[in-house]
Structure formats: C-alpha cells, structure tokens
Image (cartoon, rainbow, N blue to C red; front, side):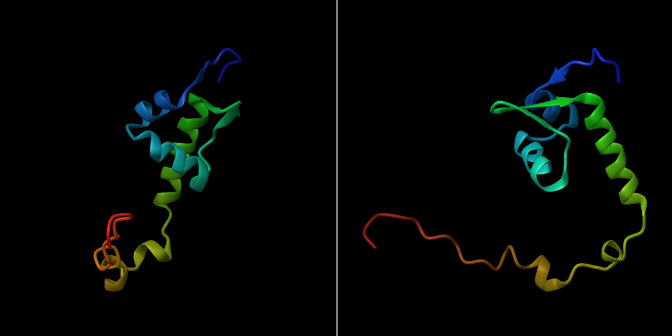
Length: 92
C-alpha cells in the first residue's frame, strides 16, 4: 500500500467483492469492514478491503464449536413460520 493508493467508493467495493451495496453497508455495521466516512459518503482503501477479506477467510478455517453443530430444526423453520405482514391502511 503506497501513499498514492486512491480512495474508492461504495459502488467500487461492492463490484470488487461481487455483492450488493446493502451487503457492504451491513458488513460495515456488523462485521467491521474497514470504511472511512467523508461527510455523508464512505470511502475505502482497496488494500484494507482485501486484507479484511483475507482475515475473515483465515478465521473460517479455524475450527469453531458453533460451526460444527448442526442447525436446530426450530431455527431453520423460524423464517417460514412467521405470520404474513398485514397491509396498512384500507378498510379493515
């Protein structure tokens, strides 16, 4: 990473990683994706993004007792057992 490494925007990072912009926002909030706020915009250094991905891949290789356990049936069926949302407004 040189001093002349250019800053890239959200669209560039999403394209580079092959994901939607919403995923990039979620990873910033929940998983520590390195991002720098400049006013209302996020800016990124490609080298920091690539390093973050490498570190995440290394952590996945480490055995994890939670990952080794099969998912319980109640967890996997949770999303399908929810009641449908009611529409707002109207006569009812």
